[in-house]
Length: 316
Image (cartoon, rainbow, N blue to C red; front, side, top):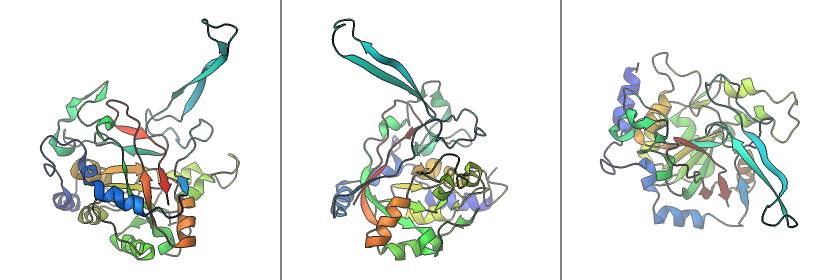
C-alpha cells in the first residue's frame, strides 16, 4: 500500500535512469573529486572520531523483533595454537564473527528494500537470491569518502534529545543548517543527530538504568517523507542518523510502512546509514563551531551483501 503523499514525493525524487539504465551506485555517483577535496579542506586539527557502536553480544541493540537480525557474536577458532610447521615457534589465536549486517552501526545498500517487485533503477527484485544481490550488492559501491556535515537537529531545537516519535521536518533540517553555518553541496553526506543514543547509555555499565533498548527502538524520532525532497534538492550522497529506523517510527500514515526507506533506497538510490553514534562529534562541533568533516563510511566488500556493518570515521 502507498498513500497519495508517498506517490507525490516519489515522483519528485525518483532518480531512475539519472546515471544510466545500468547504474548500481545511485547518489554515491555524486561523490566526485570536488566533494573529496571539500572533505580534505574540512580537516583543521586532524582529530579522528569513531561514530560506531561496539560489536559484541552483550552490548548489542537488537531486541529480536526483526526476524533473522541477531547481535554480534565472537567465537575463538584458535587459542594459542602452535603451527604444525613450527611446533616450537609462535602460537596463534584467531576468531570468527557472526552477525547481521544491519545489527549495529551500518549502511543499507540499494538492494535492501524492494516494492512491487522492483529495486532501485527498475531492477527486478527477483535477482536477489541465496547469494545476495549480484546487481546491487554493496561490493559495487566502492570507497565512500566525502565531506560530511553534521545536522544537529536536537541542539538546533534547544533539546538534548528529540521527543519520542518526533517527525523531523524540512524546517528542522533548515534550523540545523543555520546552526552549522554550512549548506550541503552535491556529493556531501549529512549526519542527522536526534540525541537518541542517550538511551543506550554508551560507556556505562550494561545494567545502567539509563540503558533502555525499547526506548531507543520505539517510538523513535526520525525523518519524515517530506525531507526526501530536501535531500534530493541538495543532491546529498548519503544520509545517516543516530536511530534504529532512520525515519520516524511509528510512521506518519497507516497506509505507508517505512516509506522513507522506499524513497531513499528504491526511488532515489540514496544510501542510508543507521545507528551512527554522533554525540562526540556533536560535542566537538558545538565547542569549536566546525560542523563539516572528512567522512569515511566505506562498506566491507562482501559480494552480494545488501548492507554492511561499518565503522564510520570523522576526521576534522
